[in-house]
Amino acid sequence: ETGVTQSPTHLIKTRGQQVTLRCSSQSGHNTVSWYQQALGQGPQFIFQYYREEENGRGNFPPRFSGLQFPNYSSELNVNALELDDSALYLCASSPQGAGELFFGEGSRLTVL
Amino acid sequence: GQNIDQPTEMTATEGAIVQINCTYQTSGFNGLFWYQQHAGEAPTFLSYNVLDGLEEKGRFSSFLSRSKGYSYLLLKELQMKDSASYLCAVRDTSGTYKYIFGTGTRLKVLA
Image (cartoon, rainbow over all chains, first blue to last red):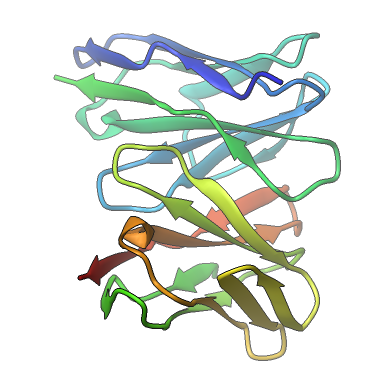
């Protein structure tokens, strides 16, 4: 059984650019959520997708957007990057209705 | 408001028992979770409580009191590999569906 995989693992962007992060959910999991984790902090919920629809969102501006595809993989897009967007971005998948989240290893974004 | 509080750091000795506390205030509640996160790695699931009481899983136990907005994670027979951050998280289903994480407790286990 393949776990949650994320790409890229590391990337560097400059302020104002756009970035797309990708996530493949664990087999059988139809719910995907995204988190931003700054150094020394806990993960902050960005949004969640279930069956290709966003069904939950945290306190992030609209320049953070996402997609979920029919195979349940997902993308996180961030436009107009700011220095404070530098963080580890974690994707997590879960089966429908279950509580436990299965996390990927994350994509570490540095904005210069 | 929504808030989860847990101590920033704790230190304990190998073989000892340590209790990590978590208090929460959220608009809605549908379960409390504990995750372990080693430096530079993804969080991994440890335990889940949705009803009051104690859940035991080997060396790890977690307790929940919904009326007090309080949980703790108990780690017994500490090992060096238990040095990690421990994250308390609440699943809040009021309004939009979301998970709220605390800032994490960094546990150092000393020989």
